[in-house]
Image (cartoon, rainbow, N blue to C red; front, side, top):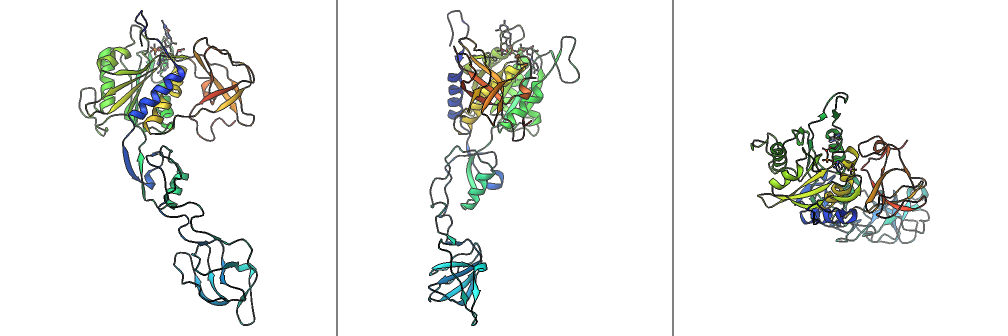
Amino acid sequence: MEDPAGATLPVGWEEARARVYAAGRDAALSVVTRPLAEADGHTLAEPLTPRTDLPAFPTSSVDGWAVRGPGPWRIVGRVLAGSTPEPLTGDGTTVEIATGAMVPEGTSAILRIEESTRTADGRVAGTPRPAPEWRPTGEEARAGEELLPAGTPVDPGLIGLAASCGHDSLPLRRPPRAGLIVFGDELLTAGPPGAGRVRDALGPAVPAWLRRYGCQVRPADVVGPVADTLPAHVAALRAALTGTDPTGAALTGADPTGADLVCTTGGTMHGPVDHLHPALQALGADYVVNTVAVRPGFPMLLARLVGDDGRARFVAGLPGNPQSAIVALVSLVAPLLAGLQGRPMPVLPYATLAAPIRGRGSYTHLALVRLDATTGTAHPVRHVGSAMLRGLAGADGFAVIRPDTTGETGARVPVVPLPLLPGERTS
Ligand SMILES: Nc1nc2c(c(=O)[nH]1)N[C@H]1C(S)=C(S)[C@@H](COP(=O)(O)OP(=O)(O)OC[C@H]3O[C@@H](n4cnc5c(N)ncnc54)[C@H](O)[C@@H]3O)O[C@H]1N2
Ligand code: MOO
């Protein structure tokens, strides 16, 4: 979208998220079949259904005696887990049964071993509990019943369920492959900042954030700082998107299909050495989103390139200011990745503001907060300038203060989470 002066008009934050999610869905990664042991971190491409009823047969929940009719009962055999028992045909008979064993046809009750006694002539006596001591066929699920929908992330809980449902492998969407290109001649990659130069804070951090969103990022796919020239920008982007080195040769060990998503940092504005927009133009990219009405981070963008193979690949332009880059990750990259994997749009949790947060006029304000899980409250943190990372390193996410509003104490607001792992930020 262009205004009459030729400058791009920023799109609303919610609209931008909806657009990038839809673009991801339209370019959803192809479906592959993977054995269960390799399925973690993938996404269900089809609903998960059991191959049989669960349990597949009536299953004893206790060690004891499967009895028929009134007691005492004469012992006629034994059934262990893992076999198909003969039916109990006569009243007054019993078989010893193990937990997990298939209950013989004709069983009227199961008597726990510790609640049974023996008569003088060796028969089993006792009173079975009134509630059945076995799990009936189909108690947990019926064959073909939808247990989890397509788009569900595969985690260890799902993997265990799939195995119990009888699956050896599943149709899945793989984790996206991502790369990072850092722009900026002023960046140092080692040692303390000074003399006009700052440390590259994004090259080491963004790949780790991307991995927490489930991306595969290989060390070789993290490139830069790239020289502040247009040809260097074009070459770096082309190489990352195609899996070749900047001279066009295939990279040793590189995936010849390139990354699904390439993030870049810096150069999103139109300064003298900001080459991202001209580089995208040179590569024939089209914008899904080009600047967003959000503070900080408004110059963020998402562009799409369709390769010779017809596949869409994406470039997420993260602004150079370090906090703004992370705002762009949570704002655009997270919904894009959800779409690419066929997952639902991320649902934002709500929290109650423990202190006021100012609005940013007609822009959405993403304000770093620490969450208190016990009270459900969000607490603004300090040191939140867009060039700073101090506040972010102690925060759980960003409170969303909608355009033309102020975050009053006590207001319920959505929170965009940082992709933290269990145990992080617990102190
Ligand atoms: N005339 C205007 N100038 C700027 C505006 C504006 O509206 N008008 N907006 C500012 C905002 S807001 C942002 S955000 C930045 C975005 O600029 P770029 O994406 O082009 O980023 P750079 O100019 O390359 O760098 C900005 C800033 O961030 C530092 N930086 C860059 N990369 C890294 C890194 N990997 N690690 C640490 N720090 C990094 C860089 O040194 C600059 O200080 O534009 C403003 N300007
Ligand atoms: O929006 Mo800039 O991204 O405020 O620092």
